Image 1 (cartoon, rainbow, N blue to C red):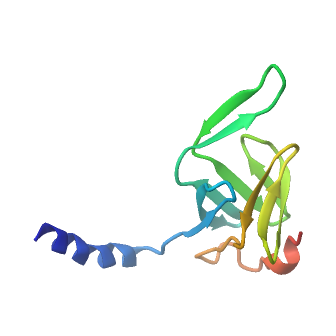
Image 2 (image 1 turned 90 degrees about the horizontal axis):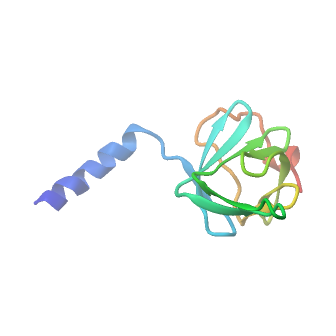
Length: 126
């Protein structure tokens, strides 16, 4: 009886707001995609562990990862600093000084119009 009531509620809850777009990195990390006037914001669903190579000062960073992909093809996650990103038929990739995060066979998608006028095919090609 309870499971039937929960199943009946799911469509009602889902229709109240639009579901975010989801992408998965080549490393298997899932990210929600949201948009703002500056571009795309990817936020990991679960904590991400990154080994930051820096000689004797190497470290492991962990936590919910946020990656900003700008309309001017700039990329920024707090862990790696400034980089660039681009898109091709095979997906999209963000590249930093000594690291890259690839999203094969996908492209970021805005469920709303915040990034209107941004054409992935011509604005940030690889």
